[in-house]
Structures are given as structure tokens and as C-alpha cells.
Length: 245
Image 1 (cartoon, rainbow, N blue to C red):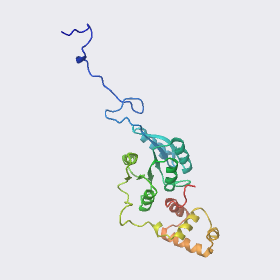
Image 2 (image 1 turned 90 degrees about the horizontal axis):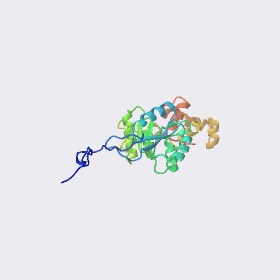
Image 3 (image 1 turned 120 degrees about the horizontal axis):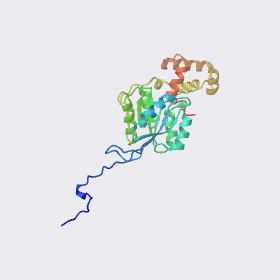
Image 4 (image 1 turned 60 degrees about the vertical axis):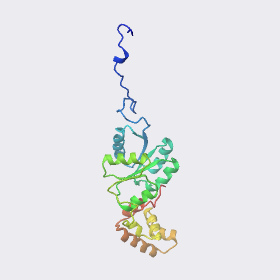
């Protein structure tokens, strides 16, 4: 016959204690939530307000964490080296060059880093170039918050994410971008124009006549439907012609 200690509840009658796993903030997580470390993210965009909004959005997600921000490619490379993030959310149009051209240098700085491009550009050429340079995801800024988070999680898990509204860069019959209609010489002239060179300076650089440069410039303006140097600069940045310098 079993005896119980006076005042002590038998083990069979005691309720099972409720167990929680500790989340990022130190409190209990939801049942079934993973205990794996959060994906560490570097935000790269030249608009501080947009970075702030993304930081607040990501802060609500237990499996994601912003560890650094940057507004230029130079700062992005420095922060990547300092924090070794798992993933970068990268804008294309940055003050010191094209984000697409920065994908390679980021991977050299942090081998294995995943890259999600977040851009206002939704044309085939930008999508194609981003994935050709090694991007793991591409989302347009008009997308929903859920789509951005889905892209981040997909890329973080080793997958490839393309915004459903974007053209497929692997399609067999893609629509050609205007930039693809430029000859190698016209691309070089476009690059030099975007860097601020005059027609005479470009002629000296390429060892051609000023008249030849003027002809190339007219063809470039016509093919790109550009009416100003500012538009040419946008095309050059988007095509990655200016690099991360």
C-alpha cells in the first residue's frame, strides 16, 4: 500500500508544466516556433525613410533581424565586412553606382551571402541583369510587405524568388530591352556620357572625331528614347555600366 506525504499532491494528480522556448526578445515564442538563429539582414537603400520602414517591418518577425544599414555601395561593403550578414536587401539606384554591379563585391566580402534586390525597376533588362549577376531574389517596391518577407525567407532558405508580376529572365522569347539594341561602342559612349564627359573628352578617350561621338550620342538618345543626360545616367546605372566605384 502506497503512502503519501501529508500536504503533498501525488505526482499523477499534478498538472503538466507548460514549456516555452525563448524567442529573440527574451519572451516565450509561439508553440512550434523554430529555435534557429534569425536571418541577419543588411539593408542597402539611399532613402533613410524607406530603410526605417523596412527595419520596423522586419523587427516584427522573430526569424529575421536587421544588423546593419547602408545608403551607398561603399558603406554597404564596409558594413558587410563588419557584420557578416546572412542576407542583403539591395536597391539598384544608389548614389555611387548600380546595386547590380555591387552583388559580386558583396559576395567577395561575405561568401555565401544571399541577395534580394528591391527596386522600382520592373522591366526585363533589370531583372535579367540582376539574376545574371547572382541575385537570389527580385522584388519591386510596389509589392506588398508579405511579398518582400516571402522573398527574404525564400532566398534565406536557399531558393530563388522572382516577383510574380515581373518578366521571367529565363523565358525563351524575352522582350529585348532598349539597352540591348546598343552596340559595344555605343555602350562605351553611354558610359562616358553618364560619367559627365563632354563630346570632346569622349573623342579624345576613344581616339575618334567629335563628329563620330555626336553621331553615337544621337543614336543612343534615339534608341533609349532619352531627352536628357539625366535619363542616360539612369540607363547606365540600371545596366551596371558605372560599377560600384
